[in-house]
Length: 356
Image 1 (cartoon, rainbow, N blue to C red):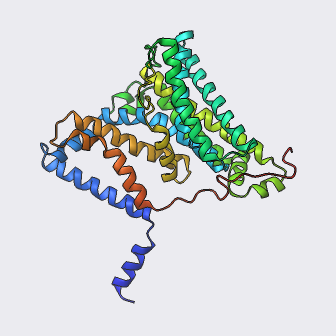
Image 2: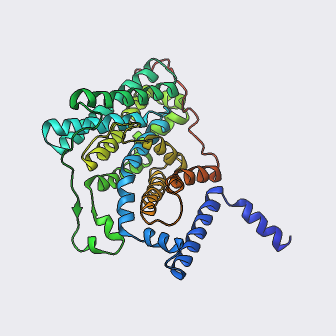
Image 3: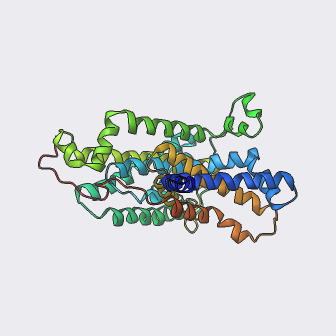
């Protein structure tokens, strides 16, 4: 066998994800080399933005609602319930958090109020799709549309406009000395919701992979009949997973509005597609909480970068720069191939004795 044939075989054995990662790293290295050689060029501006502490800080802040919603989507879909209503859960929790914070004058009380509102809406979705066996896609779209109409309408009724007044924000947590580190100092000078995101990612991974409940969730989405035979109620596991998705998405929506101190209800609202991006993130992360977080950080980093690029006047139309994160997501999804969804995702299950 020739050396060329062996090389071709090794290349074919590489997964699309590995090839994509290698291409991305190679492109990044080219940009960095060009940027250092020509500081005043577009590549130089890109390197300056990529190595800026402000870019990392913005990426972390932008990651919070998407990553938390993605974690919720993982639990729901892993259990067999496709929840594309994450966008709606983010919207309703974002408004509820601001409203409760405004009424009580308590930021964290508002945060809890946003989470409760999301859990209630997720519970309604769970009843419709599990108890009444409605189509999960249609029910998820209904959740989104209900929240998209209800939150701005409630704001209009309460405040006389779709945008709420400003409320207090959670502020930032600053770690002495570490916050002064170049670039990575942004990790130690951030909103409490950023640290909450890190905790949620680690806790979700542990819960899904190292606990009995996690095994039940995976079995409910892969082989619900086997789970039922083992004496565990499939319906109860799915209810718990959907409610957990409501809790996590509620944390994301509440963090989004409270970190800005206001709910914006114009157009697609301040959520602006973050729930759908969360779905892309956990699919790209292959239903792994850590993978979903890294996927989210990639998109959020690109989003932060395009915002900074628009201010630099690099000679590229802002309209093109603005779509950079979305185009990148589409290209990445096209290159990495199809993610395998759980076998029973989207399928209803009826047990002969599901009350156990």
